[in-house]
Image (cartoon, rainbow, N blue to C red):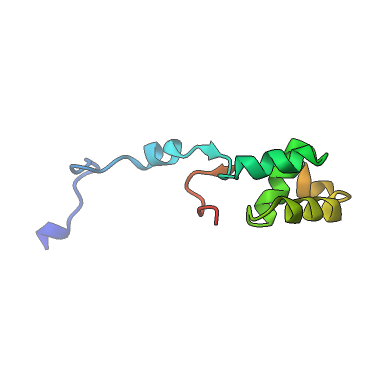
Amino acid sequence: MERFRGNKGELQAGEIPISSAADASEEVEPDLNVELLNQVIGMGVPELGAKHALFQTGNSSADMAVMWYFENMDNPSKISSRLIFNSFDATFA
């Protein structure tokens, strides 16, 4: 049973304190296709709205993103907030 006892709060080799792991997370934007982003912006969509539109359409095409934007432009909750994730969140697909 002795091997199952705690180590009195001391870290083992390779361990990091929990507070340091939480601090290591950072806010990141999803990886969007810059070429598509520029195309959507070139079609008159504001940059933040273009980012949301590309994210919501799977970063697949400028046309789909512009259609999504115009379908959702009257709903500011979908297009006005920053598109930021915690680095520990699920990866963007």
